[in-house]
Image 1 (spheres, one colour):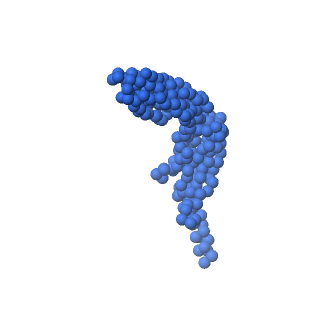
Image 2 (cartoon, helix red, strand yellow):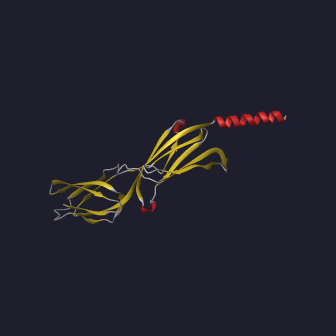
Image 3 (cartoon, one colour):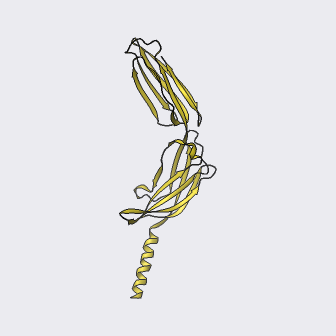
Length: 213
């Protein structure tokens, strides 16, 4: 009987070890605006096993480390192909605020693809924008303005349409730093005029975009 237990134990160890595979995960942490690497970023991986407690999965801290001076980190570990893994990143100076990040975390090995992988996280610090919109010498309530603001470094945009004798000054809103373009079409007495402006905001900068028409 003891021999049977021994064989079962050996078989169990073999099954568990056969589920593990050495895989390299290449991590890159980048500034969205400059594409420069963000050094000393804390990176960690959490493992979800098949076990459960109270109907919930069991999560284990699997790995943690920091990116090099180029914002890169190569993680080579033995991953269990029966488990799920999620990778997280927390760049330095997070207290200053990031107004853009492409992902908070990312799943590894989606679709059971347990091959070497590359993971990219992108961040951008905050700046702020206020809008100052004035219909100078308003013709009548049919006057209109359509305006559109675009963050040229990413896929964020904002647009709005206003009718009448508009005089608006908004509060400052946090936005990712970088390159911006604002365009507005103003119609008065049936005549439409196009305006535009471009500018760059450094981290922590603030600007008021004035649209007189």
